[in-house]
Length: 198
Image (tube, rainbow, N blue to C red; front, side, top):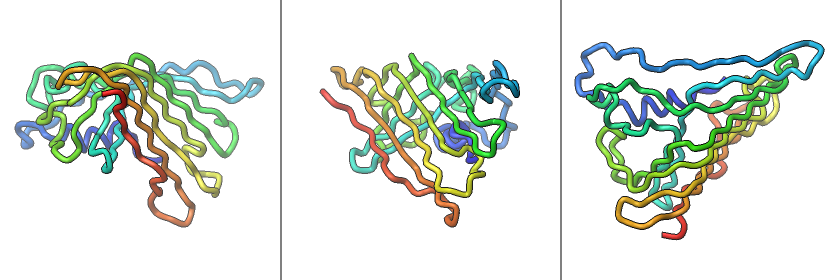
């Protein structure tokens, strides 16, 4: 299974604690609630978990993050007092009893934050240029890469945002990766972040 997108973001965007010599407190909490897995029924596992991801677009010079807390600069990792918790998404895994597991994660009323990519120094230092709430989705055709075939996975976010400079816009971000069995790293097929109507 590929790296947890939340941990990737944690290392990239929140790796800016005031004193890195102090032990990092354990703040990530798992929220699993398995619905049903029975041999007589379709082999589906449903649960909820904290989920956060980012999409960057070098052409538009934008970086969008879905799932941050309401006040990310106030978390312990940024020198604040609040525990770090990301938004909660609904996960569904299909094909648990077969060799190939497909995954879908969805969330609504998700925090959406947009930053200027060229000046981004982490959420502890940088201010978002737009903020709003909207919908997110993550899908993966072969979570554990057991099929031996090409795997496609991607992230999507959409919603209205308020611009810090004034006005509103619609955020649309999506990124798609392709993993070929013979290659060590996924290929980025598309990575786009757009603010329309501003």
